[in-house]
Image 1: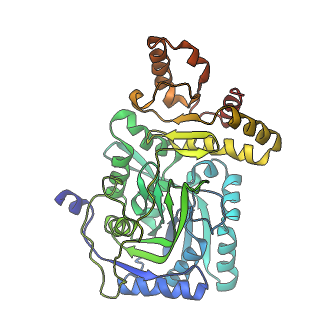
Image 2 (image 1 turned 120 degrees about the horizontal axis):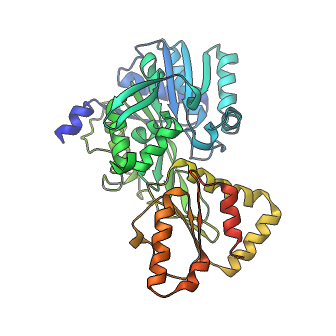
Image 3 (image 1 turned 30 degrees about the vertical axis):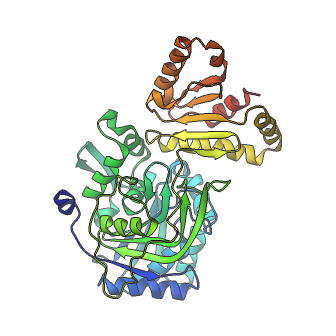
Length: 416
């Protein structure tokens, strides 16, 4: 416990009732929280890191709502903030600038930024953090490239409250992974050649990069098999109308775990820490019922994606693109419907895992991406030893780092 207190100094948190509109009330709620904790930005240039992981409508609890960020900027502008940068590195949507622009438009962040510029005269821009100016810092696993804004600006971390398939929860600590270059995100999942794991990397990143303030958007939250919305009751929207804020990420995240009903064993990247609540804060009360816990798979029709913590953003986004193509192509959708009648289940593996986790059965299996190559070979050898070579016809491997989504789609349709 002492180790965690050394890395993450003790402070205080506050909880306020917050709604996404009208914007005047959102601003007032955030101003109250900042005043309650006596927070004032030390620098007039402010860098804001929300969670904008997917190009989705902001009513979807996958992303930090732009209205919350708008209210925050309005509140900070009255505390001396002059220039604002909203930055994100969002996997697939940061590969190219045109993809990032689409992300901003579909999430309504672009509209929010223009409104702040025109209506309030506030100097605010967005930035794709895959193409920003970086500085190299030394950390436990070598050298890490970090956006310079975390040092040159007042840095505000604004995550969304969500449960998460790999990490149990995604809150302040996990949201910082969106600061990283795509190459470094991949290494977080790969554990730097097996030296460590995703959970430890997230914790260690939080030990060397500390925001000046953290504000968790829990106006709406995501429960179930996050971090994105999925069909058939796998995820749900939980309306809490809350914001949780504080200077210490670990303390803020511990408060959020209490609200969500998620244990430290389920979210091992968040070190245990006592939470001190400000006198004017709302009480820290667990949600009732507790948040729906993540399953160990994501289901689309008959496709069950089993993604381990070793599976990085590249293959996860490629997997998502497969189902976008199914959704927007009627001919492909017709083929998929027929396939579901033939095979009620197809397993889709992303990221390496213990081979004993993969059962020998006749269910078709696709090993997607270079990280699964060893598991693919091990599984084939087990089939031969068990003298069930016929099942081999239902086992496919798709190479690539990341694997190509078109190749994944073709592999699924091969089982017709």
